[in-house]
Length: 274
Figure 1 (cartoon, one colour):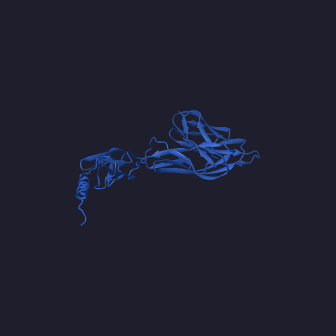
Figure 2: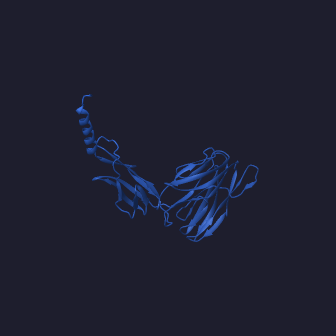
Figure 3: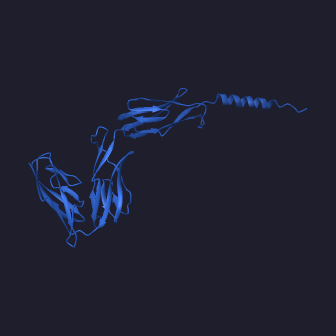
């Protein structure tokens, strides 16, 4: 007859009691905070129950809540942006709670000008892009995109949106704010530039009206290269401002020079505002 082993039963009972008494001690939310760019954009938070030793506890599922559902809605860990602002999303279970701050930024579109860019000149020729970040109401907001070049061997792009040619080819420049993006297609043609002309040479506008200036480049062969992209600048921005596409807008009565530069070559025109 096999001898009895009473300690086995005692051990099993102890293990069962320990398992029954094991409880979650904390809730861990990942990521610890979230930022949503755009109304109706969504992401997901996860919550883990941990025991007092930091080990996962699988015996329950936390419930979720938002401190302000008008800003952020939450359903099973999925958070959805409803309007700009800040809210706190919490996960709760059996008296335990963990929180994650959530910020919603209302951004809807990035408009980049020009939408297509042909960059003609020697390597190192650069022009700035003009961009406007808009919210869901179509109003400009003071956000700066993060820029990237699809092919840095063709063009590079600086933090302020200035595009610089490297080699001949075609690529795309993208500006991003969160998941929202806008961009421009870029064609680079390497060509020596010896002279520029700005057209029209003289223009007259009223305050609030605009004039589009174009640039014609000339190579060493004397042949014109019409409507090339150039870097524009107004000598008096109080009188008129000019964007990267060469569109100048009158601000107050006076005169200003609209200057263009391409590949180190410069030219200018005169804009009168009344």
